[in-house]
Image: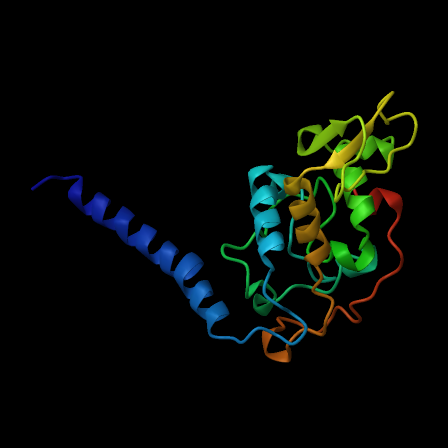
Length: 214
């Protein structure tokens, strides 16, 4: 008998247990609960924008899981109440993320609902905050001599605007912005989904510019 066989069986058992507890069981838990009132499925444009969000690796710097006051003052930052399983009813797979290089974005639309703001910020974050370390995404936009019918022109300060012509948003930029504007889970959390009751109101003070975006 291969002396390594018991170790292989043990490793497979640990992997199976971890898969059950960390992947399958949470999925069953989420699917067993109805979507809360106030949460709607993503539109086609928003779903496409979510794919752009994933492809750009936005979750490497931005989480989508506000945490309770016992762990981090996310509510005080204006990032919303702690998230619960039902908040991700239409997210397959979820984009929880692990980093806090930038602010949590699960409720970014609640504090930054402007499409124009997001387009400018995506094209050149330094056009809004000169200290921002967020990368720019100029390849999501087109430089044209003049805007055509239906084009969405990006508002830019003179220091970041082209010498001639205009910057217009591509469909990918519009879809990504539609997704960001759809991120709002500030409705009351379902009581059966709460892990604790110590965070108080979902509303916090106005975020500072450093907390709003990078």
